[in-house]
Length: 229
Image 1 (cartoon, helix red, strand yellow):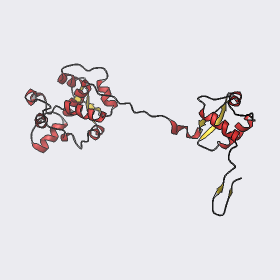
Image 2 (tube, rainbow, N blue to C red; image 1 turned 135 degrees about the vertical axis):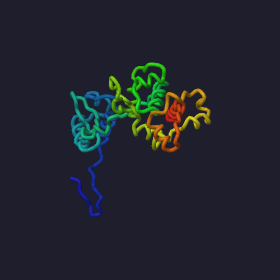
Image 3 (cartoon, one colour; image 1 turned 90 degrees about the vertical axis):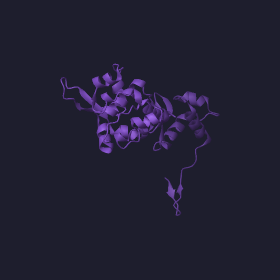
Image 4 (tube, one colour; image 1 turned 135 degrees about the horizontal axis):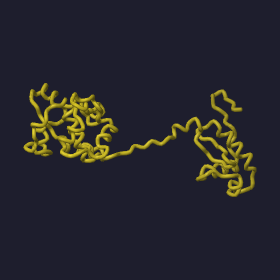
């Protein structure tokens, strides 16, 4: 039993013998569990391996790693009650396709908007899982149904979208004039007659009393590239 001296220093058990240290090192370095015969073949001298294995098993019983025996083979394993800490988590980075970026831009400036309306603005049908990818990122979510025949689902952006792009509100996005000045778009090619119905415009009307359309394809693409660096 461990004894505590007056100065509160614990007297730990004696150190492992050379033979015990050899068995410990062999098991620690092994790529797979080892049986007694294999352990004995690697030792510098003949010793009672079964007894040493039992002693090491007791020694590691309450530590972060345990010495275990499965099918007559021995190996070190993470303590069972700590195994959850060892679960591996990986972050998989995915680059958005051009179609996904265009779809996101349309939703941002026209929300709430239906799938059919997005396809009409883009001029092409949806690719596979384009909208689903944006919802998986938690940047886009369903926002009720449009009051027209068929009651199609409408989509809009989430708070997570604002947070990812460091925006406090939608109207913080650049305007068409700002993007034109930065050389990112040609404002003369923008057909303003088909825009100006979403939340973005309502915010802009409150702030500036005017409707402004802004194409953010390049801005979003640039932001995503910066995130990859």
